[in-house]
Image (cartoon, rainbow, N blue to C red):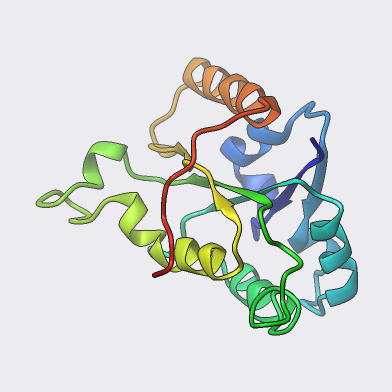
Length: 179
């Protein structure tokens, strides 16, 4: 299974978490902010990278309860009507998609009645809907929480878990579908 990580981090040098997740990884990592520092995205190159992949991993930090700005622009441009969705857009049908998201707050803060008042999956709903519309198989997200508080030991353990996870042949699906 060909897996590709599409990494969206505006300042990777300052993110020990996202650096640790991809350090010494043996699969393709497309660092989108590095590839397109002027934000001029090569749509064809990105679509070709998606086509070559059986499992697509979107790795990013949660920014203001959403995705980094270049990630939104990337989705708007790359996932074109007639290519990724619509009656003639079937390029991504049945490809697996995994979200790998990092948060500064702890997972316990992402619950109803807590600081964030919503679950992380609720904040990720627009992505799930996008992936369902493009007929991808949505996998259970990999969440690395509490990056503001994480110790080196915890970070190493989570990075190891991530690297093992994305290499597995079978991963649990989220079960989200567009009706």
